[in-house]
Image (cartoon, rainbow, N blue to C red; front, side, top):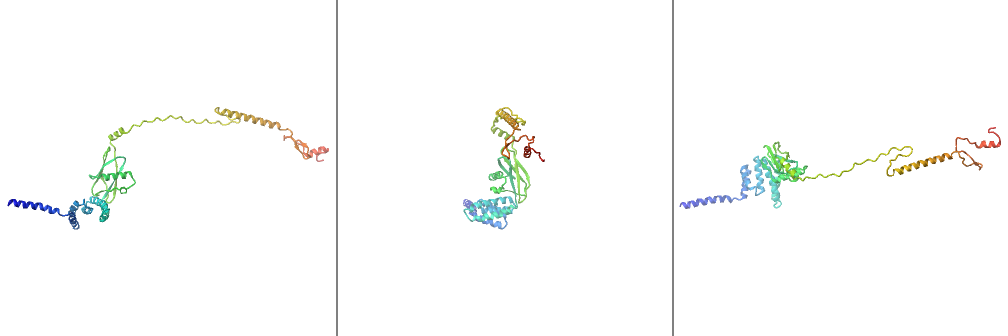
Length: 319
């Protein structure tokens, strides 16, 4: 009798969890919606937390519950992930397009309740880890920050990077690590709700890292430059005198000197021949057809035609 009673109790204990497991995900989803409509956000959040990995619709409601419970940063990130999942599924099933569009509209409302931190890398270093309020950012987001640093004039969303959301009511601390550099820590970063705050990350290399770089760098031999002679300016020519120019001796200078000397001699000979011909008679025709004479020397007066005729007649001029 006792044995039969124990078997009955054991069968009831096994049957009760089996009955609970028979509740489908669809039924749990509808139950969570009922809690949400009744503003029992904590109960609804518990149900949607177990279902959000199976459907973007469940994640949509989970983000709504977190927003109603004043966890704005978590709500923003969950809603952003809902958009990404629904966008992919919408290419296969059109019903998820409505989920995607609804999440986009609500995300704009969530942005007003959170603040954003935009890290800006200054200098050359390989960023490894980035923590914000003891929350380490995923590797994909770290790579996005590097892409933004490579293109300084672009905004994070222009290169496909997601903004880093923080709760504006909590103190914000940023910690960055890189190989061979001292950790960068920024405490008590001032942030404003609905706005972006840029944090410039400038890291200092460790002495050991610089020493390792010096050893790895190949020693470049200093190449000896060929010696070149300084350009010597050409000698200046002295001013020419009245006779012949003073030409320095050298290639071609002697010939120039000889040419100048010969030119001077020829000039003197020509001048002497001209002076010798002065005063000699030069034959010229007269009105009577007889050759007459006239002197080249203009200083001697020559008789005029009337005077010559008067002398021949034996009279005087004016008699």
